[in-house]
Image 1: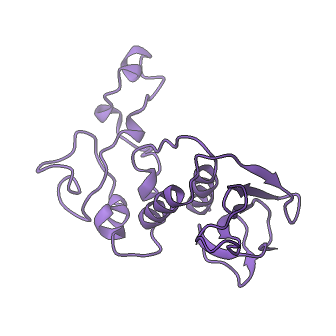
Image 2: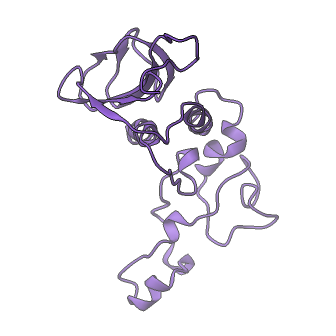
Image 3: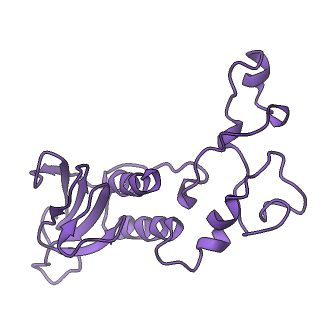
Amino acid sequence: LGIRRARAAILLMLALPGSAYLYQGEELGLNEVGDLPRECLQDPVFWRSGGTDKGRDGCRVPLPWTASGPSFGFGTGPAHLPQPDWFGPASVEAQEHDPTSTLNLYRRALSSRRDLRVAESFEWLPGTSEQVLHIGRPGGWRSVTNFGAGSVPLPPGTVILASAPLDGGRLPPDTTAWLLLPADDGSPFGSRGN
């Protein structure tokens, strides 16, 4: 559920205008490593607090580039903070050729965001229920996020990208979809708002 919601959240965030900031590892769907041994902690916050505050080491564990090796491809020897075994299946190497991976979702989203001219304005559109956030963007594209517990109908349009598989013409819970309205001027993005 956590990764499903994170994938929906990144598409929602990237649908908004302005700069986007990604934190290391989120493009791989990594969560904080919460079980680092005390003897491995290096963050000065841990030492200054007398060990009462773990600090940030759990989110500074080196990224896994390969599915195996002493540091999952981060270097030739072990990493300075221990990497958990679950890093192998979450590595860049493991996700590279999986079209449904979180890494490839980020790549497609960032490429589409650039093509869709996301730096421009947006408008709040009526959702299909109180649990749906529907955003309209210039050029006839939309972002729809379902925060509810059940599937909801998708608005008309061509799906550009979705954070999870769709249920026919319905948007499942904890899912965001980007849609493109039919172009009315021959351009790939339509003329609304241009």
